[in-house]
Length: 158
Ligand code: CA2
Image (tube, rainbow, N blue to C red; front, side, top):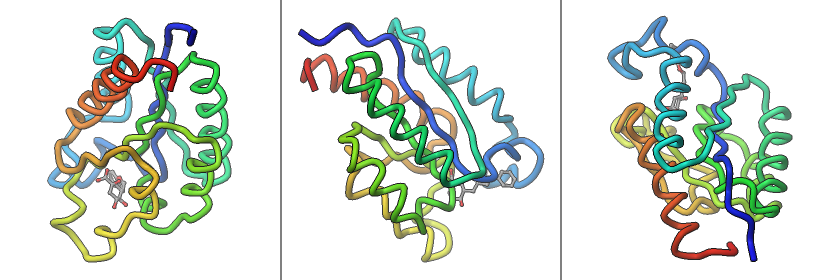
């Protein structure tokens, strides 16, 4: 029997540390700390902790995906909410990291990437994700956390 999960991973990619400093029309006025608190509240409502991280470095994000995969395989984590920022549109290495550890992932974007430049409509990650949420701002992270919890409840042991 799989142990009850105690956490959910929320990994943020490059430049998301700048939230709240510029581009409010695209990304809102909230900071990364505000986003962290939103995720923590959403997770707490489900009885788990949100492990929220941000990195500007592809290799560090890959290492964190591997860690999330190990913790999910051990039943400790529900899976991962990933906003890989611009790496979404460029990184085969991050996609391979996700498929390499069989990590349940929901891809999230604050902005509606499909209403922006054409290159933002391409995602290397989406084909190996359970689903994609874009354009809902920080609420999208809460929806994704909820979806991972529902998935685990419906498919215990996965
Ligand atoms: O909409 C999203 O969440 C994105 O993942 C954000 C990325 C962008 O490259 C993706 O296409 C869509 C960029 C994050 C940059 O965030 C900033 C926040 C404030 C000021 C400058 C950048």
